[in-house]
Image (cartoon, rainbow over all chains, first blue to last red):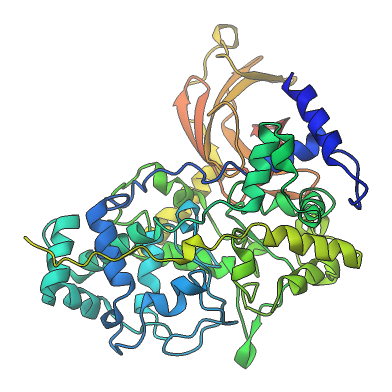
Length: 391
Length: 135
């Protein structure tokens, strides 16, 4: 019954204004529905005892905007993850104390991730949140300095104890909890509903009137995205990412003649990191959350692979790709349209990634679809807790 | 730290190839539990996943039972999966734990793309495969 109604609705939806004015096929409908509903379900991270807890979220929010986490006093998490810039920095490559090699990923929707960072060197959001504190080019801190900040600041120490109990003796234990508080805060940063979500849900409930509100160019672009473009294969699911890594033909040479090995190096860093999910700082030792870490291993083909970023609010997060080398969404679409398969080093990627050879109108439509994944509410930081911590 | 890396390497090696510790039962007494059944000249097997419906990007566990048609359970077993049309495999190396009596439990499975995946079961000299479509 529902199928019949849907067919009617989709027939009604097609109109002469569409470049592809045939009704959506059942395959297309299934593909579109898989990108929702939004927000997607989420459950707290079992490796982080502060995940989803108000006290840890409050501490994390303070630390996210805390310049003293860097010994310079000049770099904070929000330097690169600025709320008013969709929680990234709008630069090609991150700039903390010095310029890094990669583009800053937005932390919006980061709670849905399985691996963190372009190379997936973090297997939890809390481990990933520690990395920039210690990176000389970003915040330039140390375990001792970050732990001392919390120990010696009465308000931070009070909030720490409320969130995690007594301050551990070791610096690493304090910093692990700092990472967990930062993660708990970032887990609250989720994009709102977009025109695409309204269309997707209208499609699910076969609401002809609501379907008409979605702009025609965006719908044509959506059909390309899920159909001919094959974009949904990697940009899958409600967050528009499969959470894994691919070589998409973006150069991985870096300034000074070096090479960014991407996922290959990321796995090695992950396994060497004392804060990974196999280590003593996880609150879920040996548990389900560590399955991914126990079973990942570097393969030759991982060289030059980078994470598939989610696409929600993608129109607000230029420039693009792991090295920030593409300035606009139109440039990204052109990259995939004119892709050089000779550049790809894996048989599998060659089969998946072929130049799309899009017509000008098709490229414009694809951009229109990507723009329909935009909302701006998430750029507004929630009011920070103003009252001092009381023991 | 080096110890942890060594442990991981050993674990990964065990995941790819293990010696079956199960005491081989007589072929006539071997019964397969419910699951998808596959047959070769030398053996029958059944497997099932938990959860039963494999979702893109979600880890799952695979349980396997093997019955030899004659003789003993093979000593070497290797489990894997790939996408034939894409010519790539998984990004993970599943581990295999022998439970005895030709039963195995394997974790670490994750299919990261929608489409047709092929499970490959290499048991002794036998190779059995089965396709599943994941959406």
